[in-house]
Image (cartoon, rainbow over all chains, first blue to last red; front, top):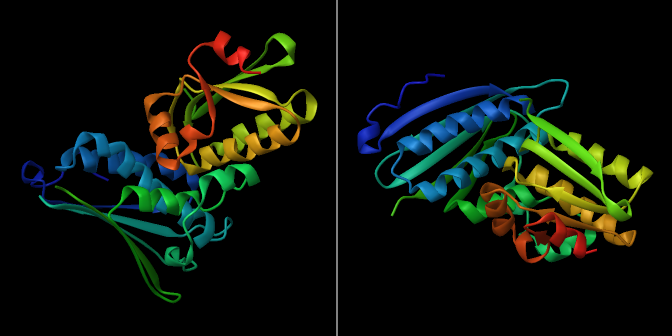
Length: 150
Length: 114
């Protein structure tokens, strides 16, 4: 990963990639990468930490559910930004995950029941304008998170 | 500083003050979860969690508190959150937890809520 500003950062248009192994100790590296990307984009600063959180949640889900803990795999995170949108493509080849099948949560019931699951996808949907998922079974899963810049 | 450090202090009436410092994510949440479970098993279900030095929290960290509050209530206890950092407060707002959890800005105020 480069520590230099992304190309064409002045115009808010750039494309950068990070590849990590599916281990939770790499989440800090991921957050630092996304923080650098949002800082170079035209996104308003109040959204920066939220976008970092949404990507952290997506990658944490893949680490937890996509690969066996004893056999970590690769996760590729690609940021595509321009003047009108900030898009993150997250690719892995682990077990496929279908966020569309997960219903939104009732947080009050969640707390009453002490349930911890489902919060990550809820956060992604709250923050991003688009959360799309596509997969080729056993080959590649792609999660696309998009935030429009207004 | 390491990723997450936790200090524990027993206050009046066997109320325990926990102060995590650092970040609470999918990598560190188990450390806090184990600490809280040990306190529940050995001491009390009345906790104050000082969040002023937690600079980042994801759903894994929030999930620890959701599970712990449910356990505390089942055992006639409670958890009061003291001075969340702006980032933590923002995530609690996003999840709707700010309307459900109990907060205090001063330790004395937190103690009065038990």
